[in-house]
Image 1 (cartoon, rainbow, N blue to C red):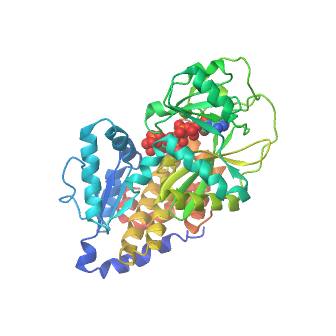
Image 2 (image 1 turned 90 degrees about the horizontal axis):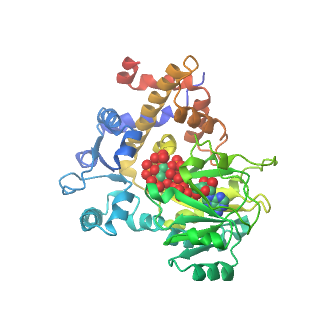
Image 3 (image 1 turned 135 degrees about the horizontal axis):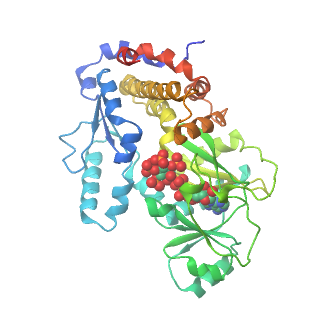
Length: 427
Ligand SMILES: Nc1ncnc2c1ncn2[C@@H]1O[C@H](COP(=O)(O)OP(=O)(O)OP(=O)(O)O)[C@@H](O)[C@H]1O
Ligand SMILES: O=P(O)(O)O[C@H]1[C@H](OP(=O)(O)O)[C@@H](OP(=O)(O)O)[C@@H](O)[C@@H](O)[C@@H]1OP(=O)(O)O
């Protein structure tokens, strides 16, 4: 077996670490500010232990305490969506956010992934759909669009019906809450007629449903890099309007890797469309990054079965759990490109280690669960399947290629482990 080239990222780091000045040493602290769920997903506690062996301190930021005494931070990685949404109506959350922003403003050398104002706009579908809509102009040559939509702020049915008509929105319509974060934000409905609009509760958006053969392309963006996976998605519906009961659903029932719903089973046999072209995806990601001013986000794309137009339906903050493997290495590149030369080795070390750590946990899961035990967890199995079906990733960097390749031959992960004696001994 060929030694995966990603290992070469790790070696020079150790050399550079030996020559670190005390100024650099003081910058070896990375703050994470994530929900309990996300922290568990990336196993931050175990990861912090691993980093410590590389002289890198991982700190879980306590927002309720002054940040000054918890820093200085070279980087802060956060997903403060909950706090940002709550700050709209809760003064305590607003205070936490102000303190956080205050720290960031007075520490311009701390790299914040991502800036709060940029994130906030994605938490509001009114704002993010405007961005998606504007993007159509610059991406027209790539035949990239977003469905027509309407912002609904009234519960006056006749006003909604008039707006739908005057805007020329075609049924079925998909109704999504204005707030794009939190469990309720994934509750949606499919409305098939003018009468059905009585079930659109403001504030929400009504977006034209686009038939796309029940395939969703989820693009994860990490700085300069991106990669794409396919997910299940809603099936095709005949163009409306027509009499049919509104369908209520939760987006996580239809578009998670493990989703298995009658709403995603096509009623008819249709030829599978080719995936979006790599060039178009590159153009899309480039425009979005510039427009959003963010490094960590996801964009959901479908392909219109009639026109073959790439259609953007959603933009998300911070890649989901599945992105984590790719995230660590890609983030390193992002930081390097930002000219953070002095921090280069630090970030490379952190994220190469993170990758190794995850490789370790995954290879253990794989070797213990496959092929001997039928009780492999559904999410893990689906995640593997998702990865296997996403080859080659649309933006193939060395690290991404490596990751994908190694998922196909999980045993190769073990080859990485001698780099970490502690992990090897655990094996
Ligand atoms: N305009 C549309 N046309 C066709 N299908 C759509 C459209 N909008 C959404 N969908 C379907 O509904 C699902 C959920 O939509 P969307 O991505 O907006 O939800 P979400 O809850 O914001 O998702 P996420 O979990 O990524 O945050 C999509 O995966 C897709 O199957
Ligand atoms: O990151 P969080 O835990 O908050 O949850 C995000 C979730 O990731 P996870 O399921 O891997 O956790 C994402 O899933 P996929 O992109 O993989 O589909 C997606 O549903 C986001 O919309 C969620 O963010 P939220 O809507 O809550 O802001």
